[in-house]
Amino acid sequence: MVSARRSLAFVASCLVAGAMGACSTVWGFDDLTSGDAGADSASADATDTDAVTEVSQLYYTSCYTKVAPGRVDRALRFYTETTFRAGPGGDTGSLSLRMTPLKLDAEFKPPPTVSKSEIVGATIIVNEASTNARGVYAAPVGYLTIDRAANPLNPSEELFFEDVAIPGRFTEGRFCSQWMSRSIVRGGTPTPPPMEGPENTCIYVPVNEGDPTPTLGFADYPLPCLLE
Image 1 (cartoon, rainbow, N blue to C red):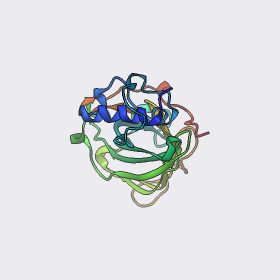
Image 2 (image 1 turned 120 degrees about the vertical axis):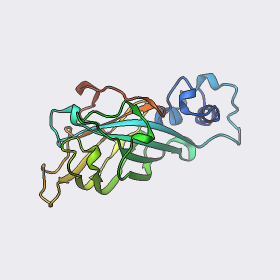
Image 3 (image 1 turned 90 degrees about the vertical axis):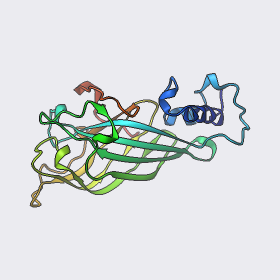
């Protein structure tokens, strides 16, 4: 069994190479805490004082919500930057998220690539949400505005959310979160009812800057996103 620190040292070599995509595996919470990953990093010394304690990864995020029930083609899409920091002993840690909406075209399709040049509007920021041994984290956000250029329902108006929370479970490769909020449109009229439950799920797909935007179908969304 390879130690968590040894796994982290291997992640460091990936980062030195320039990006997470330089490695054959996309790393997530399980890799950094289970001690079973990174078998090809046997040359790394478990007592190496230079072992890295955090790792960053870019994700394409698509949130299927009651904003458009039954319509995954009208999902909310985000350019999501993450940083996971391993805690003492490697059993727990913290996850930071920066989720910025992606522009949609006239047919409500996302841009052809997951690129920073395609983002628009305000960024959802979650700073160092604590993760337990299973990678589960709470992520209260509060009030949120989706720019009209990223609105999957009507590009002529902004989309407003109140009391947003996106609790999730960070794991290797793809991971998921719930989307909980109250949705309101301009003028303050609530629509639809409070959003919670399996109909409101976000999927996070690991990518590199400039990668083609993943194509997702209904079966790609874990309904519900379990946090147990």
